[in-house]
Amino acid sequence: MELGYRLLFYLKKPKNYTSGNIPVYMRFTVGGIANECATTRTADPEKWCAKTNREGGKRESSKSLNYHLDDLQQKVHHVHALMVKDGKPITAARLRDKFLGRDKPQKILRLLEIFRLHNKQMQELIGKEFEENTLKGYRTCLLHLTGFIQKNYKSDDFDINLLNYNFINDFNHYLKLSGGVQPISAAKYLKHLKKVVNNYILKPKLLRDNPFSEFKLAVKVKEREFLSQAQLNRLMKKEFKIARVANVRDIFVFCCYTGLSYADVKKLTGSEITTGVDGGQWIFTHRKKNDNSSRIPLLKPALQIIAKYKDHPKCVHEDVVLPVLSNQKMNSYLKEIADACEIKQNLTFHLSRHTFATTVTLTNGVPIESVSKMLGHVDIKTTQHYAKVIDTKVSNDMKKLKRKLELTGS
Image (tube, rainbow, N blue to C red; front, side, top):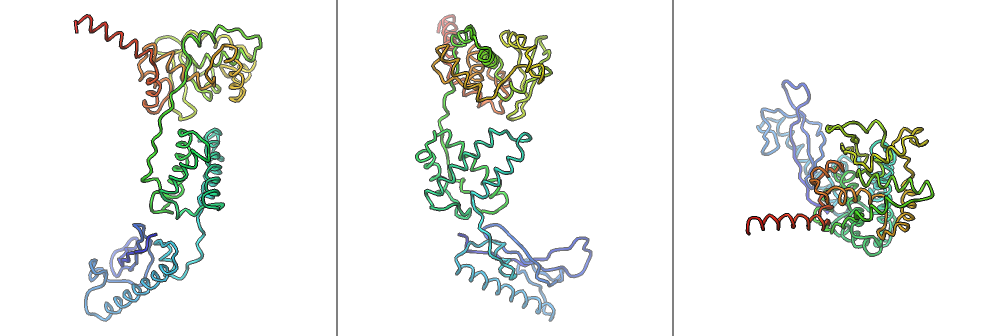
């Protein structure tokens, strides 16, 4: 807890000042954060000494002012000593208010209360700045944080003034053990907490020290799963008697050949498909997740699926390209499809995006910069996670190198 303070008397020129005496202010500084108030006295700027924070000269008016400032300084010292004795957190604002006699019982700002406020404000912006799925992650983080505080501190909330490295580190430990989440999920929840602390506590200067400043989280990125070309071919050739299952398979395959996420294929309209620079049909859209531009030349399998559903009632009525169901239903049907096609991976809709990045593009020699652009990634490092797992591409690249070395005799 910060105990020391600094007190400074200075002149503060009013707006439109031309000449004459200037009001004297006093500035309280604790832990690098300052607050100020007026002394109700004025001083001659020609006689004011910035080094001593007093008015120079032997005139009676100067002596009277300086005696008054000395008296104020002693009173502040006395007030500060009382606050130290009470053992309560000292801030510049609290010191100033205590000195002015307008200190009221300070409401203790609590972490879970602030986190709930964040979630409430995010809820109000669903559909404008955020998606429901994003809020879901913060709600889950709040549940874990609540459980952690109840277990470790036997409390229903936590004073933000007590936030420190140990709290963050212990929460990380709790997530992996008592919380039962994977390291990559723990990292995500800590990222959520860091955002709330930064935007709702640190930026408003409710806390001086950043509890995350010394905390380093090393997480091994989980390798992306994807379908091989053989699996994708088997999936495409499989005949399904139930129309809705066949529809889900087609939409999944469409995304395997376009890289669109669930949210982006669901909102895809005919107006977003137009002629590209090569004269072929392209998708010109913006990712719902980050609003990044995404331009994708349409391959033959994707074009065939578009043509297949152009007269589908849902597509006509809602002006969309494909009849996409809810994400939950899509993933439910995909499990059935995986069993029918003897695919061992956990077939989720997002696997189609991974398959586009790996099997369809990178494995076939499409430059990673182009793949990153089509996927609408903010940072090419995200795309590089896919490149790390493509053994067939590594093999093909090395074969080219071997042939080149053989030709040169190396």
